Length: 254
Image (tube, rainbow, N blue to C red; front, side):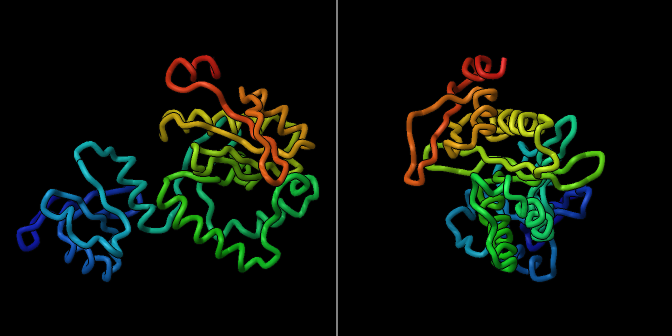
């Protein structure tokens, strides 16, 4: 539905979660936000040089956006996690602060933290970290490290995803001890790499691994990674997924 407000454009788009509003009028947007409406700015030639400070999201070329884009935009404005992808056994979605307690349960196991950084000792610091991560990493990049849920039970069994780095993105994952040795890491990481190509666009993908983490090294080789020869200041070996573009993707994933 489209209507006028003082001669400006205002669009109402129905989503599964509520009404999303789009407007090119900055003052109207700020008024609607105060009322708790979910509204994003439409950037036009007339307003692109104006002050956008405090505006959460702006879009261009709305005619090129699909319903899924509007659904995700509403969820972002409402603080609802995005559903990212599914595999045969798992579902990946964005983290929320409510997941923190379950993450502490997973990280309590020594096999999980042996080769990776632990969570904050203070849970409130971890909750603040996750809150900021959702706002600044998901909110800005649209991707990051996601929660893994086992489909049949809905249980959180780990995390996986990619994070932005200067040279591309870095793959990371952790699987709860009770769910290891079932091929889940390969299943999930393979899906993450496909998602990177399809929805994010091909970038250089790296992964840093402790030399003693033989299981992860074996997984990276199985995923098609190769040693880059680099070692960081913490002694972590860098692996790189070779190839780019359509031919490189075919070579790596058949």
